[in-house]
Image (cartoon, rainbow, N blue to C red; front, side, top):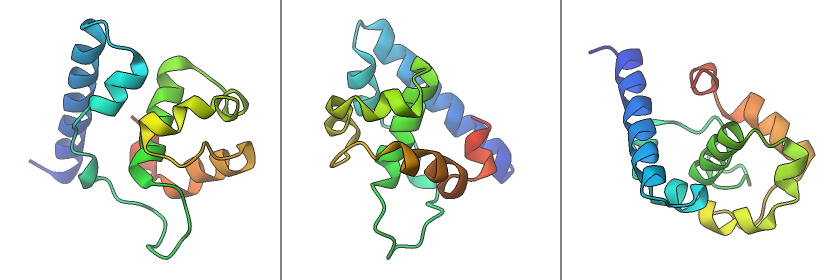
Length: 111
């Protein structure tokens, strides 16, 4: 199986697991916190020395954003989301958009 096909399979597995958690009446917060997907296969577009928030925490935050349809501004007004996603705090709006464009590659954008 090629790399792209493997990544699509991984994304599908995460989607199925997330759906399973949601069907058990878990909140979206709990479901995203509980999903044990192959997130380690995704790579951070920032170098290790960069003082950025957790890569996997930001990934889960962006999944949450896609599922809920919240804007970047609305996310910044939800400090309660930081803990469940393993973040110290929710980044400000001027950080979120560049993070999406620069930290996550086109492959992640497609999912």
